Image (cartoon, rainbow, N blue to C red; front, side, top):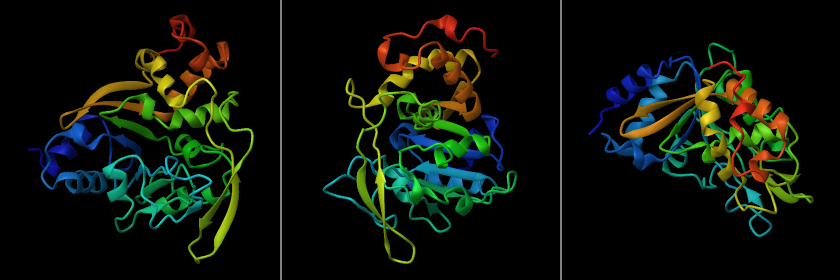
Length: 270
């Protein structure tokens, strides 16, 4: 059974620092038995990154839609696992007001001067899932690392943001969906938002693993461990640059190709 201190040691051995900005996608069960269970995992993460910026996705895309269109950030459960759902309820954690792709954030953000509350501002105005200039794009601004704990790039939401920045076609619905967001003062803010959509696949992100080798070979990602979990530690800015370079050869290659030609990224330094 892992202790909180052992998990914090794992973070140090990854080369991470308490002032880092970190986005975590996770499979809780992959970590193994932990003292305090899921809460023990969160205790380790929140204590370690309290001077930085700790972020977890609190997505609600699975349930939000025309029949369930009011997003209340205080009560709406995340559809992406136990750690995000426990994390969003903890003291000091601030959840963004995006109706389908919210982020929960915690920490002082001492290095970049962007605390959790500042980082999540303005998401109630987003008109796409990972809008340029929004939270997911801001991972680049704070030089964030992304840890995929027991999961792969198929759960790496940041790559959706890269696609939106690069204006990859056939990623969004033609018509927006109407949502209402419950604001801190109790009022309901209407928003019209385009959703993820591609006619060839139900889940666009399942194609992101086609760049697994590209990210490893260019140093944008490295293999590591956290407890029992096999993990991928990514640099958001490097993920952006590698993805941009590959997509410059063929903008829709994630969907149109079974395999991505290795020569498309071999010129990038590792």
